[in-house]
Structures are given as C-alpha cells and as structure tokens.
Image (cartoon, rainbow, N blue to C red; front, side):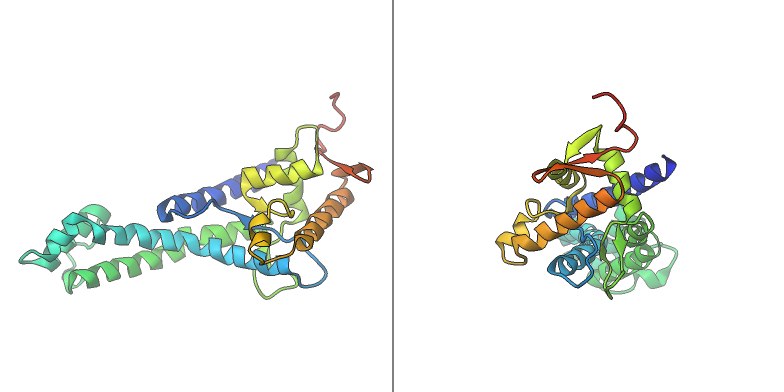
Length: 247
C-alpha cells in the first residue's frame, strides 16, 4: 500500500499547485487529458501533450500575475506620481516581497517598471530551481506523464498509477463508465468521450477518438485483473483489495 500512498499523495500535491495557480489566474478548473498509450499517433496524444504543456506553464504564469498585481494598486500609482518614484516603488516591493535588499544599492537603481521587471526575473530564476519543477518532475515520478513513442511529454498513466487510482476511487466495484466520471470529478482526468465534451464540441477531436481511448483503458484494466466484463454492455472495475469482501 505504501506505493499507492506515495503516488496518490504526489498526484494531489500536483493538483494543489495547479489549483492554486488557477485561483490566482482566474482560469477554468484544472483538467488533464490522458492518453491511454496507443500504438500509433492520435489526436488524443496531441491534446494530452498540449494539456501537459498548458498545466506546466500555469505556476509560472500565476507567479508573474501575482507579482505584477502590485503594479496595479493605488499605492503603486501614488509612488509613480511622487518626487522619488524609484525609491518609493522599491519600498513597496520590499514590504510586499522582502525585495530588494536595501543593502544592495544596485538593486535600487532604475525606474519603477525596471524594478518590477527585475523582481519578476529573479523570481522566475528561483521558481525554476524549486517549485517550478513540481509538476513535470512529480508527474514523471508517479507515472502520470511519459515521453514514450513521442517527442513531447504528455499525460499517459502507467499501470502502477492506474492501479493506484482504482484503489483510491473504487470501494468494492464500480461500473467502468462511472469510474471515468469519478476520475474526472476527483482529479480532472479526461479519458472518455463524455469527459472530453469540450474538445469534441469545439472540433478539436471526434467522439470516436476518446471512445477508443476509453476502450484502451478498459483493455488495460482487464489485463491487470482490475476489470471484469459481465456482458456486452456491463463492465465493472474492481478494487483488488476488496473484491473478496461480501457486498
């Protein structure tokens, strides 16, 4: 169970970072288009790669938006209209972000906009060394992303992560279509055509593209012993740790 705890914790931390970025940017809810690996290139693969790149950029965009929001305050406008705009602007940034260091005279040189640009640039450098690595690095480590059969990184969950998702989302058993809904509602994962309605309605993909993607997931889960088809229209995903319990 420890492997499942590590994977699901990593996924939730990724989602937390992306959701905080969404709140700052005022963007739509976070979604991840997941390709269930196909033997050949597909529309879903391209959309998945686009989804990955969009989400990967969100934390840095949110950081810049948060910093530059200071430049839209009345306090900042008053500083620009003062007799010493650079000094007053620097004091605002120092109070808000503990920058610039008043002991470093070089940091205080330049117009207010130059100070703001310098702050954003320095924040980007530190962000890319630390928090900016969370999405891409953790997604790869928990098996959420892959570059397999492609030059671009995209969301393509591994068998290990799929098993973790089953363990976390399924009590004893659940219909496959409901499992897809649960993955979307809980984690923003888009796999089947019902969850991909936005892309289908605006013409980025056909319904068949995502139906095939869902079918590949069904086959993957069956091969892992996590899904049983009882009839042509009824397939159940089963939790391997609870399948023997009495319903």
